[in-house]
Image 1 (tube, rainbow, N blue to C red):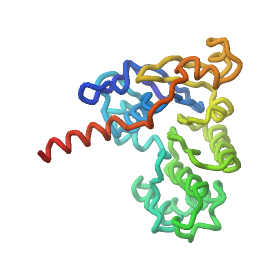
Image 2 (image 1 turned 135 degrees about the vertical axis):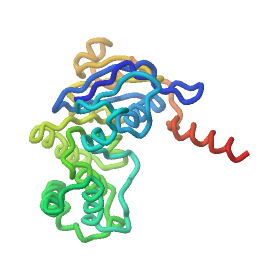
Image 3 (image 1 turned 120 degrees about the vertical axis):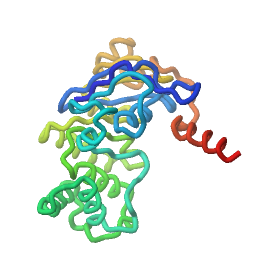
Length: 262
């Protein structure tokens, strides 16, 4: 369902992703893990057509991500790390806008919205303004919105960041059920290693833009002679503290914006 073949992404003299290759199977829940600045967000931005690779090939649902951008975009849904809802609209209105953007047939919009808002237990809140929602409710609405156009692939970029344990557990139950019911493929990032161990069938670990290894949690523990995924992760990536991640694409744009103003 997802093929990443020898992909490299450079921003000026900085290489954010270095000759990375991996694949994700249909219906698989696949975790992409790494410290801040490892290249996770850049990889997701390339797969979701936001930026183009410098070299290499990306295939999603059979489509070349660079050459067939429209078909690729219709194939995936995404829940960003940062909130992307319009908080001055109701939950239902946020869903309606997404439906129009993805050209969902008008007769299908209402039943799809009702089905998904029921799925994430927000149907009774459909007329409420999103700015009144808790963080967990917003995440659930973003997942419902991301599923509205029936994507083959769902990208989750740290979807449970800042949520309490109960809400995190509920969100993963939703996602796990969806993969089983609809054979949807999920690629997610998280800094909560227990989430990756509990939910991912396979895990890729990246650092400094390079792919270090791919395998099940058990395989990674065996590879590093450790007894937990956290220990395996630290064995592969090191224990030194990392600065907060600065998106290299945003930094590159800012540098060019600054130069143009001189």
